[in-house]
Figure 1: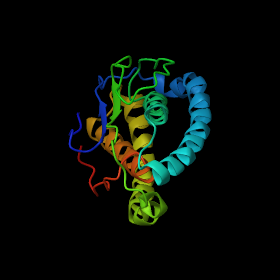
Figure 2: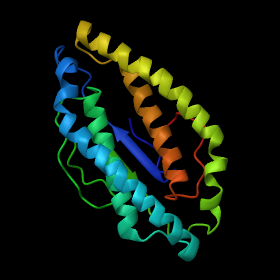
Figure 3: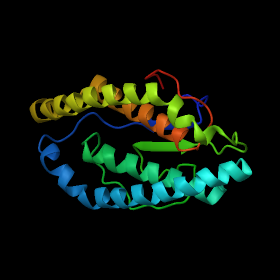
Length: 198
């Protein structure tokens, strides 16, 4: 599954559907070191987003190193979460490459975000309000995605394969939520579409 290059945030996922039946029972445990790093990176991302707010208000831009660091935190989180939810079986790398372009170290997951050369100065003050309908959709999708993760767990335990439809849905929901976060987090001025399509 690949995303369209038309939207600034591009998230991709490719992996074999076959998952050894016992892996869902332990894979989340193996992911704990990554999930702890994700938790710390979320705190870092909040600080960088606050700095970005003032940067956009005063300069209409996010400094490239800050932008790259924020994108790196999202990429790391995507790799960790896709592994923790046993969507693939390859252990993700402990990679902290500060780049908005994916380094390709993780063969199954890819996340890129196009750097905006110019942002509207006052949008950071009201983007959160414009995104309220998006957040309503994200919450509804998250509830359904939780059911999807459980259905995927049962399917893998019984058949040894992750159902393609469920996995594609989970990837699409994650992409949707990230697009909303990128918009509200001053990484793009482009309003995210109300669509699960790539």
